[in-house]
Image (cartoon, rainbow, N blue to C red; front, side, top):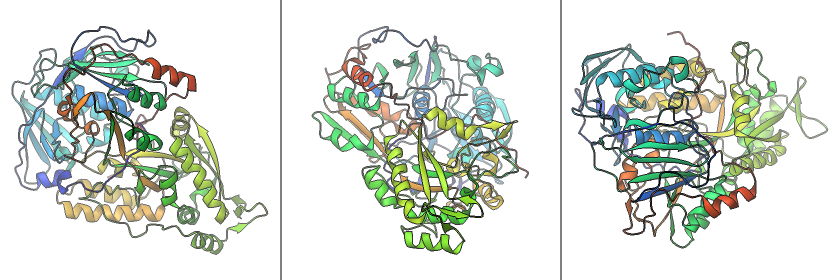
Length: 623
């Protein structure tokens, strides 16, 4: 999950929601392509600077500073993992690149029962994995059960399923205890080949297992080489059932820093960058033979507070003052988010209000409380609550001091800048923020820390971000449920009413009814403030106009992400290389730009994905 500097444009169509498709029963999808992949090897690290196995033909060279963490979907967590997975494998039900509405993939069509507790899926006939073996309903069932049940990032998508049946190789029947609109519009679990993955011992699946290469799949390209620190190579899948992509290979080339990636684009060593830093976006667009693209995403940057309840986190380490609601609300009024966008995000983002990005147009409602910049009101609130100023200009109450550490990742210049701005702003109200710049791994460790098997987070506040699914808001909403403490929750927030409303909205197939429930959830969290959401952020991308003839932003059409935000391989297939301009396959040498990156030092561009890991065991909630 890279900290994508993203600009979220609130233009998504109402068809984002599964509910719109499922209201008319039975529902069916139009056939719309599919695919597969495979190879053998694993992480061999090191090596020379030149990728192996050169050949001739068209190649798309994609540069990044953060590479896949692990090609194993049971443990991988980075956004780069998702980029590769979404090309190598398909979801059961796909999403139209035009408007992100559900459409056929491995599943050709589906029917929903009258009580909306049973979904019957019918697979496309004749589909094959890249190794030639048939794709069956048992592959889908196994993937939903195993990857959906044990995968780091996939457990929330299948938690409503109570039973699965495969009456024949083309049919899968899903049963739920209560209606669940996510089964069609939000089943973000890749279908894996059971005949490959079921052979792996369970403890290895969720451990250090590295897939053999070629990585058997169903997408248009399959991973044939993965050399950590250098290259991830994908080649055409001979069994892909859709229109073949324009490239013989896709090379994802690893550079030491984001600066090195951007320099490589200017030098013509690579053809495209999927994530450009906000600070260099405008400058890159002014370079010869380089153009840029800004696309909408459901992503935001937030200041998170440690609210872990003592009964759940008896050994958590934090300043108790951070759990004073008045203090958090005063901080919200004291932070000028417009200024943060202008300076830290270079104006590429826009101020956010609440935990649900306005990207989700079908479900978004402006919250009642938006915390406009008002330091005078913040001071008054703290005065009224008994927080008095000490001789150092920091407020105190009952032996507690309003002085907090705010952790930020060394790999994110924009987050560091935002933290410094917040520290400067809150001085006006007698609240101190001590900026702690740490590695991504260190911050992750602080948030997932455990003691005696219980969550024990060790932080006051931090700045990071989240990115949701492109079509359904449930993932982002799930993060703040009590059940995700020990799972995806990073503020360790718990509110029984919020939990109840979350369960209610997942079962609503009517968009307007669901929107009303979600509005209540947003208002609750705006009052409780587990997060102060700072900005809604963009996907900023750049590419060479002398290498790529046509860029057609899709997902959604015309305004979307060039790589479909890890949802669909259609972004790759839609690209058109300039005739005669393609490099020979295998020529992905990081070259001069890599050396420039090394000269800067080991500031590895470990842009950690917003879909941060669910590699802990979530709490079990009572019904």
